Length: 171
Image 1 (cartoon, rainbow, N blue to C red):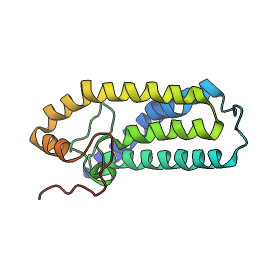
Image 2: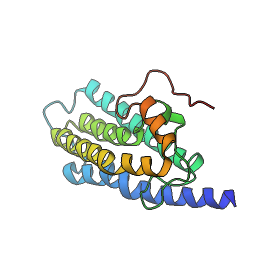
Image 3: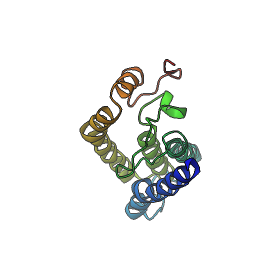
């Protein structure tokens, strides 16, 4: 039974991964740039290398964050199929919103790699939308669903600026 729930969570998370971050961090940046480099510093190797590192780090952190929802939460990050358990392990011990930060990082990495300022503006818009979603929907929903467990977590772990040391919940 647990493996059925886990496999369902994995399938749902994969679908949501393709739809949400796939669109926000992949399809829409492509629509804005067709992934063609801009000017004038597109051939400046240090900026492009930093862009690749930030892009790959963002993508890696995003996959890790989604996996936590399957393994630990036995659910998905999608509001329509939320996790059964509050996800507080892995990167979530350092910051409450690693998934959103990872999406922003992938967009910023593309902006540096391609040297496209339009992606910086887009990243700012996406960040503002994510903060509004977290404050207006996600935090109230998690408080309602997980109560004191989420309140304790929220007090201990910052939402947007990672802790230097991992949070360890009381047993």
